[in-house]
Length: 126
Image (cartoon, rainbow, N blue to C red):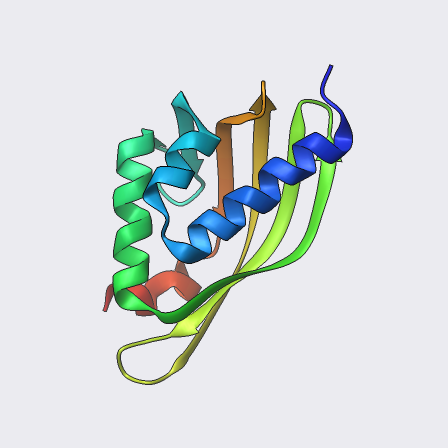
């Protein structure tokens, strides 16, 4: 059985790695066969595909920061509310609230389900 503080520590290490675009660290936090799902397309990403997305978002936002509003341990993982913040190439401030449900086994994220509003994500892709 996983201890609550261990699961929350995985979430903290994950956010630090995402903020830094630290691919090696992200890979050690995800289980090799982790499944990443988003509500907007309802498709499952592999770890490699998710890391490609991470690099894309970092290429579009300066001063990228996942601003964690809450992280709560649940049986088998954690739920996190955050706001992705940064500065767009136009100089505009970007802020996109999201929620992620992460399953954790043996100290690694085995699945991540992220919920966000695509209208708020649109500036990343224009």
